Image (cartoon, rainbow over the protein chains, first blue to last red):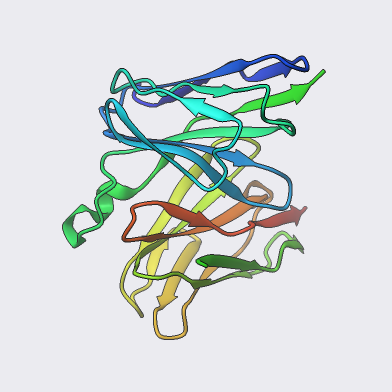
Length: 120
Length: 110
């Protein structure tokens, strides 16, 4: 089945520790995204990647890092510099991030099931 | 600054009721507006709207966009308990990124 797989479902971080959240897709999508969801705040963009070996900061990138070495994988590391990491993290992908008329349908983002990160 | 605002933030109805969820936006270089349904975990795609006045429909759900007044509505008729979820509105601009609203939490009681 095609889709986006996030792991683990639940993750606990100790103070000062870096943790890595996995996101894998087999949809052959070019673009991938990481969001953070806090209660009452909707989804906020952390990082995104439009193509392999390239990524850009989103609105709340501080304390996070990513890599995009393979098309199907976009792992997110929550570093010790992120002082308030407790949240629900969602990964998404889209066929394209293009914005011209005929590419808009490929701009639809599809989401994984999320990872809930808590601090011990 | 680009922003998307949804209202109401939460709503409780009974089965069979009709609900209307609102999404207003101020986004430079608007490209499309998307609705998602989130039940516990992964948001699932409902509609993408790009043109004013054209209704998108899927079963009991329908949505329409007004690009002049900068808003969209999502209608759900004959609600069922399975419609209980958070409904997310997002707008894309020429950057290709999505800007999300806070979401509307809908609870449908039997």
